[in-house]
Image (cartoon, rainbow, N blue to C red; front, side, top):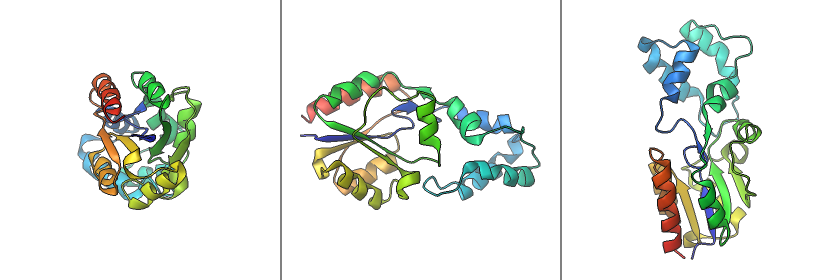
Length: 206
């Protein structure tokens, strides 16, 4: 029986860049040319391990120097680049509410510094009281590292097969499964079907 359900945020509880053109839109917005795309992705990945303490706003002068760009004075990577492209995933809201009737719930998410708070400010989350929130930028651990799953178990007070993890990254699903949790792969290319299947799967375990 499932006692606790952890949800990923991006691509599950909210609609983020997953299975969308948003990353390409971001590149176009800041002036990255087609010829620079590969180099820019390498640059971004080099500096933005999601669990680090780096503020992604500090990348702006580096990008200006590396790619010959000039950002508008008040441009925010966090807000203008990311948050403004995120959307509510209202299809999963009633599913979360039904699950919460029988199990405790929490968020287990990889985040840039300050991103979780901005998502809250922009009212992208459902009006639900989470029993546990584990934000990688505060925990200083990240998925799929085993330490963040250990922390999540400790915070939930449940272990192994008592926990269900809902996630849209296959590598993170695999890591949680190897750790001993129940898992559900949430396909961000079809939010409606994934939400329906999640509720069916949860009911099958209880």
